[in-house]
Every structure is written in C-alpha cells, then in structure tokens.
Image 1 (cartoon, rainbow, N blue to C red):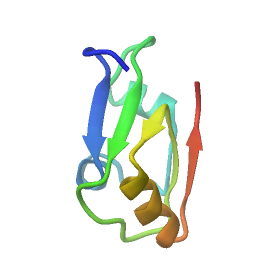
Image 2: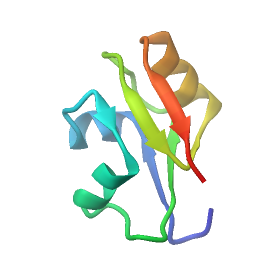
Image 3: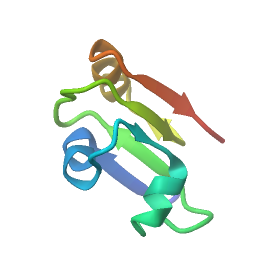
Image 4: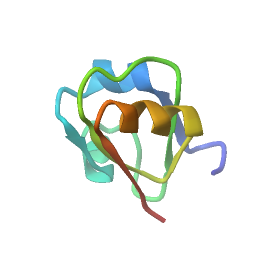
Length: 77
C-alpha cells in the first residue's frame, strides 16, 4: 500500500455502509477510493452482523472480528 491508499477501521464501515456485503466497487461508488487506490481495513470497532467484505488488505484483528460474527473476507489483488 502507498500513502494515497485508504485505511478504514471497522467502526468506519458501520457508519458508511448499511449493506451486509461490501465490494471494492462499493468503496468507489461512495468515492472513498479511485481506480488504482487500494483499501485496508483495521480492527478498531466492532462487527454486529455477518459481513462479506472485499478489500485489498485487512488487519488480523479486523478479520478475526468479521469471521467471529459469521462474516467472510475476500482479499483481492
């Protein structure tokens, strides 16, 4: 990841998105990232629902919280 890439915490996802499934295209539609930018999810915050998430990178704590809530993380390159 480079300095222009975006890092968000789990609590940011709860504020920005209402859906149970979030893809890279959803981040683009919200104008959070541009075409070549990458996104990383960090572990601050909680997950209260089963979430399917598509991102470029994720911290181990964020991944564990999503999976504990019954969700799934897809890492794309």
